[in-house]
Length: 146
Image (tube, rainbow, N blue to C red):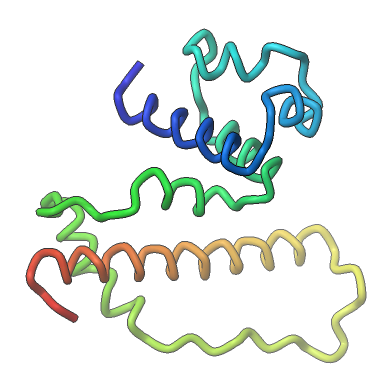
């Protein structure tokens, strides 16, 4: 198992214990069989991002909060790829974002296509906020001091 994977698993375990959850309680909330978390945390099952999402939410956390607990500080110095991303995305992410206008004629329950587009837009906004926060910190730690 890669050290980063083991670190995320340990972060999940620690969060569970601090918040007072047992493996059995999280397994019940996930609707999985007993021993699921033991197998997952022991490396019998490969940790996937969906696992992080599901376990996080079963504890009342968002996945980004768990990942921020696991990796609170940006890499210093940042990788060359992170610097290129920052240079490319910062002008886009620095622009103020207006709240999306909701047309007054929008139905109460949007159609599947509308819901999908709305979820995609929300996901994009969240990713932009996360990237702005992370990449902004990279610039500060690299001496950019923005």
